[in-house]
Each structure stands twice: as structure tokens, then as C-alpha cells.
Amino acid sequence: MGNKALDKKTLSDALARRLPAYYRHVCIMLAEGKQTVTSGELAKRIGNTSAQVRQDFFTCGGVENYHPDTLKEWLSGLLGIKKEHHMVVIGAGNLGRAIISFKDFNSDGFFIDAVFDNNLMFDGMQICGIPILNVSSLEDYLEANKVDIVVITTPASVAEEILEKAIKGGVKGIWNFAPVDLRSSDKIEVQNVHLSDSLLTLSFRINEKEFWKNEI
Amino acid sequence: MGNKALDKKTLSDALARRLPAYYRHVCIMLAEGKQTVTSGELAKRIGNTSAQVRQDFFTCGGVENYHPDTLKEWLSGLLGIKKEHHMVVIGAGNLGRAIISFKDFNSDGFFIDAVFDNNLMFDGMQICGIPILNVSSLEDYLEANKVDIVVITTPASVAEEILEKAIKGGVKGIWNFAPVDLRSSDKIEVQNVHLSDSLLTLSFRINEKEFWKNEI
Image 1 (cartoon, chains in turn purple, blue):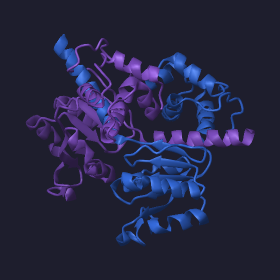
Image 2 (cartoon, rainbow over the protein chains, first blue to last red):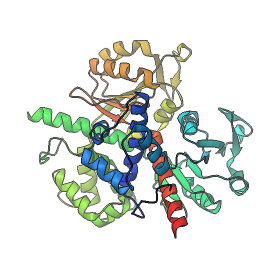
Image 3 (cartoon, rainbow over the protein chains, first blue to last red):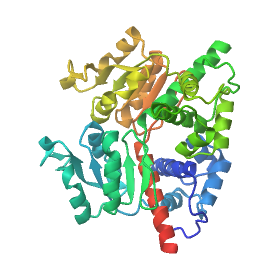
Image 4 (cartoon, rainbow over the protein chains, first blue to last red):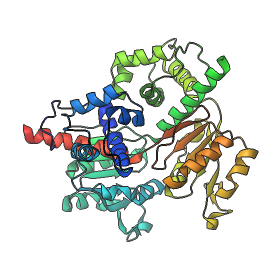
């Protein structure tokens, strides 16, 4: 991990979710030309407490100092950003296309090498220069190429089957947008993204605000 | 809020994020024909502890019993799912299209009424039966129509401007996919979605696993 001081085998999901936000905000502060970062400032941007920031950094092995360059370097190491990650996207629909067209990934070492779809009409076509292949060739592709992460944007019904093929093909992680919870295992890590959860959280906050407005 | 027992003005972000997951899993358990739900079972599905589930439900005012129907009804009330929410999407690109084509929203009372884009080529066209309007007409539209939630799928540079127009137009919430953190205020609630955060969390988990594999 490039960070030998990590003293826990598995950090909590909550902490694992906060790390990318720390990284994102340190990058913003660097771009703003900040020379130093305090735990309080970082906490404020993230909506957290400074004690939590310091505890999180301590749990992850500690960082030498709070210069933004040092912090960025250290967080990059934790998040595996310095490594090359080769990805394929399953599903050439709107969501698959949206993910492919995010340009930010490349600069962090995440490369999308191919897109797979079951629609024969797409065969031989490209999205942003990335070839669309038929999903029937996925197993052969995984056998012949190094793929670290498979992005699933298919309907729920086929997500489990893709997961099995990915495990067989030696893939390390699944970034799953299908509306079903796939499970991480010894063989593969999974991040399930439920887009509508954040809409419901928003609806909850609106609802909560209206409730208190009516009470006062 | 339909839940007078709520004893805190603002629940934590962590809890506000867990509520949609509880709702999602209760719906799945109902579909599976479960007659009862235990806090342990729900905790296991969510990757939480049963003490946390009970504490969360208590913090939200408590629920009469753990029958899935009762739980679904109660969580729906908290999340504002029983109300109608009228939404517009800003940006008719891939992500905007992906959001429009999610069919799940409608059944939860979230209706997308219009899409706005600055590309004149789209004027008068439709996506899934929803009209695409020019973004220059957004202010007039918000004046003339009841819009509860604005979904931003534009580049970061225009997100703040859309937020201002939404506040002026009496919109209650922003579901923001632009890569910039917009702020909630007294006037409007914001949920910022950073898609690449979950990719970095996945990368962290893969990295963490490889580190320990090399250590053993």
C-alpha cells in the first residue's frame, strides 16, 4: 500500500468513503494555491469535525505533515491512484456512455479499454474512441487482457452473471450501477452505487425542513 | 413529516444516507414475501450492526413494529416518498439521459417534467417523451411551474448560476452531478453526487487487499 504503518486489516466503510473526499478537497486547495492545510479547514469543507479528520489520518497510518503536496501524495498512495487501472464497461447505454465520457478518470490512472454490449447493432462501433465489443466475447477478453475493474451498467438480471465472469477472469473490483447489491468476497471487491439513494436523502432533507417550518 | 416524534431538528448526514438503504432493503424483503424483519437481518443486509439500526429508528422517532409493511410505510413518510415531487433536469447529455431513463423514480412519486439544455439543436425534441427546452427559458419556466427539485448534470462552470436561478424560482432541492460542491442553505437543500468518489473507494479497497496479501 506504500504505507506500512496501516495498523488495521480492514478500515471501516465510513472511513473508506471519506478518503476520496479528503483527496478531492486537498486537490482543490492545491489548485487554489494554499500552502498549508489544517484539519479544521479540511473538516469544514467535508462537513466533518477536525477531531474526525485527525483520527482518520491516524487510523490510516498517519501523515508526516499537512502540506497539501504531502497530503495529496499520501492520499494518492492510499487510494491506489498512482497505479494504472484498466477498466471495461458493460453496457453501452446512456449510463455507460456517461461514465466513458467522464474525462477525469484518465488523469488519476483509470483507463477504460473496451465497452461490451449485447446489442449486435453496436458491434464494431466506438464511443469516444473506445471499441464496443459483443458481451459474448467478455470471457475471452478477460482471459487475454489485464482488466482490474469491471463497471456494470446493465439491468439487475445479468449483473450476477457478469460478476461470476469477472471473478473467473481475475478481475480485482466491480463498480456496480445495476440496481442490485453484489457482494464483495475474498476474490473480488465490489462498490454498489445506488443513484436513487442520494435523491431519497435529498427528499428526506426537504421533508425534514418543511416539517420544522410547520412546527415553528 | 408525518412523524411528530422526531426529536432532533437535523439528523446527521450519515443517518440521512442510511435511511434510503433501509427503505430499499425493506422493499426487497417485502418482495421476497418476508412476514417479519429483525434489526439483525436489516443490519446484515446493509453491512451495519443491529444496535445501529435500532438506534437510527429510535432517533427518527421510533416505529410501532417491525412488520415490513409498517416499516415501508414509516420510512416512506420520513423520506417524503408519498408526496409528488416535480423535477427538471439541466443538461441533455449522457448523464441527463441516463437519469431520465431510470424508470424507478416515477413509482416513488418523482416526476421529471422537462429537460433544459443550451444546445439549440435539441430545441423541440424529446427524451422518453419529456420535452427539451432551451436553458434560457429556465427562469420563466420556474416562475410558471411548480418545480421541487432541479437535477444539475452540467459542467461545473455553470452549476452555481443554475443554483441561483433555482433559489429565485422557489425550488426546494438540488440534486447536483456537476463536479463542484454546491452548498445547502436555509433556502435550498443540496445533495452533491461525486460519482468518481465510489471508484476511488473501490480502488482503495483493492489496494488495501493487495497490501495485506503481500504482507502475509
